[in-house]
Amino acid sequence: MESPYAPPPADEPAAEPRLPAATAVFQRIRDSIARVFVGQDEVIHQVLAALLAGGHVLLEGKPGLGKTHLVLALSRTFGAAFRRIQFTPDLMPSDVTGHTLYDLGSQSFRVRKGPVFTQLLLADEINRAPAKTQSALLEVMQETQVTIDGETHALTPPFMTFATQNPIEQEGTYPLPEAQLDRFLLKVLIDYPDAAEEAAIVKAVTAEAGGRGLSPAHLQPVCSTGDILAAQREAAAVEAVDSVVNYAVELVRATRKHGAIEIGAGTRGAISLIRVAKACALLDGRAYITPGDVKRAALPVLRHRVSLTPEVTISGQDVDQVLETVIRGVEAPRA
Image 1 (tube, rainbow, N blue to C red):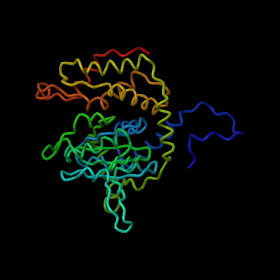
Image 2 (image 1 turned 45 degrees about the vertical axis):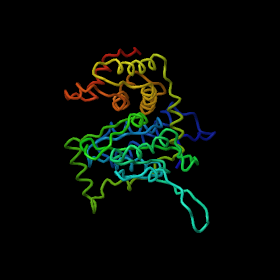
Image 3 (image 1 turned 90 degrees about the horizontal axis):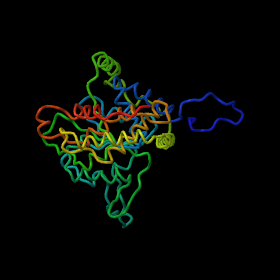
Image 4 (image 1 turned 90 degrees about the vertical axis):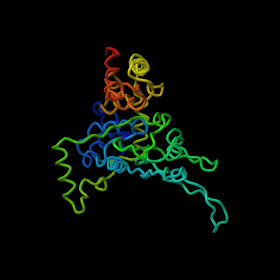
């Protein structure tokens, strides 16, 4: 497959200005995923923004809405190594990272690598495992490396963690600690599709034997891992002028002053806003960010980084409603 990052032949005439290479790559990825993950355009956009920004995603949605399906489809689009961990109350940290064992044949210890040694990792129902096991992912997510018995092992880039949790079942679950929540670049909510989209999904899935329609296995790679890494470098180079950076900082600082919020977002929240805004700009074909990019990123970036006061929680207001009032209360810079 020819990479969009390859230079044109020397004898090829100069072309008209075109979209950034990363935009073209990710448009192909978006189109490919949309073939098997129907009716969730904004979810796909947020997941692609996280990949482009090089961050991790917490996926929250009711059972049967395609969270695993989405991640598997994404892995197929650029041929990434994919592993899935089903988190359970008896899962041990070594089940995640790996461990050393004594090999009788060679009369020596060897490392048995865990499922985190991949590129796209799906941590399914992460809140069903105790905190000790959840924390085993902290070093992996932050440093993209694993330490087993004092020996450090680097992971193959690009590395991205998708963790899922079910919002309606609380019995037998362990809320993620704030330190781990903050490691997720985005918290993406997956809701029910509308009636027409749901009917189209049901028809397509049941059109093949065993209900295998819309399978990610039908997808072929549309780019390489090298293209993804090049696109991530391109995203980091997107221009962020001081006024827009200051706007992101003011949004984060406003969460610390709002009466309905007990704990506001930290500096990592502002950093994440700019990272995701850069990705959103590049997905739209721009090499600069606008206040609109920051606003679009605000809810998925901040919803897991703030805690509401008990009084507001009891009243039935949710985090997104409060954050929307925060966004409206901070004046955006004029273009």
